[in-house]
Length: 493
Image 1 (cartoon, rainbow, N blue to C red):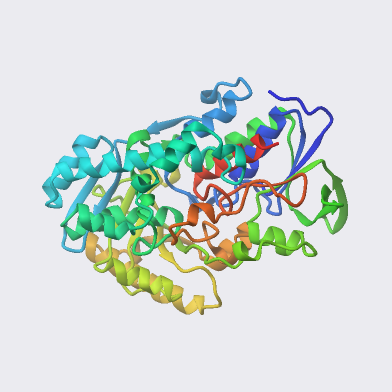
Image 2 (image 1 turned 45 degrees about the horizontal axis):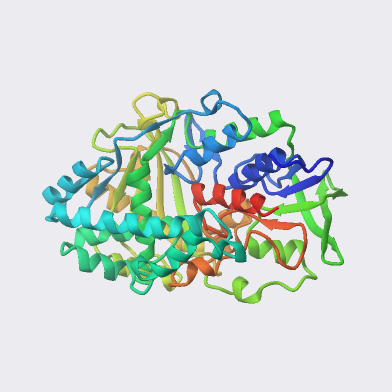
């Protein structure tokens, strides 16, 4: 571990990346304070409870858990003393509008056989796809995922040079859908593999086929469930941080990042209607990149091209306590639309189609305490556009009716009378609760072949001591990438 004795760091935002950054800064000898405007930590990775039901409010898929374990091991702690998880036998159950039900087995051989049996897709085509997916991963991960792509030293490494030579193999110049159509004749198989675009808020009819790397991460490393639910990722890391001496200030709003002669000096905060200054040698912003500049650096000249870039999609989520148990459903359930392109075209136009793909996550299938006996906690989500001034009350009311109609038809049960508890999250509340610009879940859109190069750097090249982490900056959104953003940022110190 490097030593930076008596140096002070402030982290703005107690999202998962901010917490990880605090833990890593502590390992480098910094005295760390985390400032959080909400009364709880986690950002998007939080929870909702009511009437005996508990819901993980945000991310519901857990992959690459070694990036969480790494934070405990960094401080010579046993991860299992804080946080435990189990590997899932399948990554989801898929329902198509023609009545087909397909299980995505974690085991690749079983999965290939399932697609051959259910989706009229040769197992050989599935193996060919995953071979390509692994190739993309092998070429890109050590350049785009584990290092800053904004520093020259990354490109002076021999592995990076080899990756550049093999750039033509990552399918950056065709879309995900074009690649899927070439590999699979069955429309349902194409739809399944196009679905991975939604993992970072993209459109498979626009996003580069490079994103077909995502299935490799899911199948090669597996999908997992924390034994106490997804929010336990947050609580376990906060526990570790507090044991290390990291200070968390909740209900505390960052007002401004202070700097002088291109060097960070600290931040101004407001807590209990009182304003004060925290002096710091370094400031890590886990706030959305756009709001960091607009709200915290109002007199600073921002990177306008990055700020004005197209933003990712958002989500509309209903948290439903269901007074019934459905044996045919699993932890992760996907109810596809009949026309995937129509769904994404509607999102691009700032609207919601009348037949959206519906994702239903039911953690009580694995975490029994999350719902009363004989009942289930349904996290029901559809992809929607980011907030751009739409009439959301009207859109949400219509979407709710269409979702209930779709689920009732496909499950052959009237769902609405079964709802005993309900809350919702939409782009407006995502924006207000998590400071995500326009409620975009993943910052800038990845609907561009150069998207990997168009994310904000983890270190400012204009203000010494200013760093960025979280889903709006390199390498991207989702739990593993958010954790990696904290790792990259702290390693540039």
